[in-house]
Image (tube, rainbow, N blue to C red; front, side):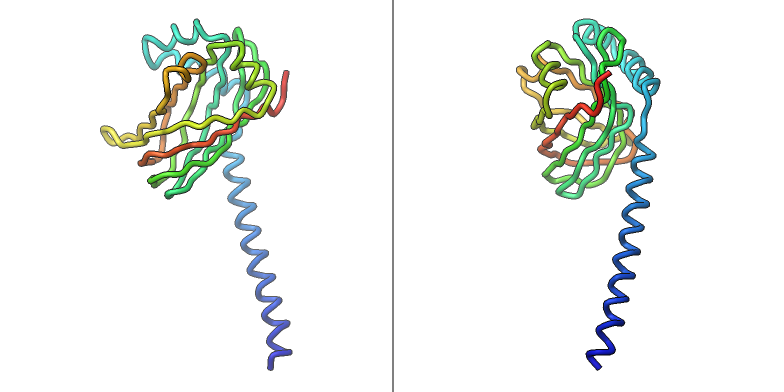
Amino acid sequence: MKITLTPFLIVFLLNACTDLSEQYNSTRAQVEDDLTVNLNDGRQTLNLADQLGVGIPKIRAKSIAQIVFPKAIKAGLFVGGNYSEGFIFRDSKPLGRIRMSGGNLGPQIGGQQYSQVMYVMTEAKLNELLNSKAVTFQGTLSYAKDGNSITTLISTQDDLAEVHTLIFNQTGYLAGITLDGIQYSVIEKY
């Protein structure tokens, strides 16, 4: 009985693994399609950010470069992840494509898609982002306000001297407080 059951079991397990692999690849392809952005998306997101507050155009004017992620995702249940691809702009000209990826840990539940603009305030920080795989650690607080999901970065004053980060256009729902490890890596330089 063991001899005849073993080939059946192997075929069954291979079939199950194939189904799981197809589902994973299908889900992965759908996420990649949902997050695909182009240079025009980056410019539109940067201009939209200017309309969000009186101080934003002033911060943009003082910044030496802007990193724009038109569509970013964050999801988790105690452990989660972040992902996006975007563009680096300087003087309204694209310098290259950049990827943001990472993980987070902390009491959280849900998922959201959002836009993020980082205003780079120093040459040193811009060079760090352009020439290495910069890893940063930051805290985030996500909560509901008036039925909308709000995410706020918890930063020190030193962090703000180098980069101001704006998160907006949030859809979905995410609640919690997390410690995020985010890696920024340049995909392509123009």
